[in-house]
Length: 82
Image (cartoon, rainbow, N blue to C red; front, side, top):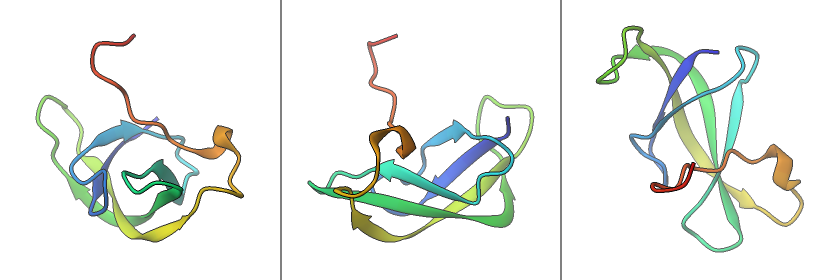
C-alpha cells in the first residue's frame, strides 16, 4: 500500500497508507458533522523517515458526515493508543 500525504484541510501534513486504487480519501474533520475530502494528484513528495516518496492528496472540500458510513472514513491515529 502506498504512502500518501494530505495537503490542506484539517489533516494538512498528515500521512497514511491507502490501497493503490483509492482516488478520493474521506477523513474525519475538526468541523463537527463534516468530513474532509482529499483527491489524488500525480504529485510525489518526500516524507521524513520514509524511503519512498508519498503520493499527494489535496483537500477539495467538505461534505456532511451524516450519509457516509463510518467504515468509509479514514480515522486519524490518536497518539498514545495502539
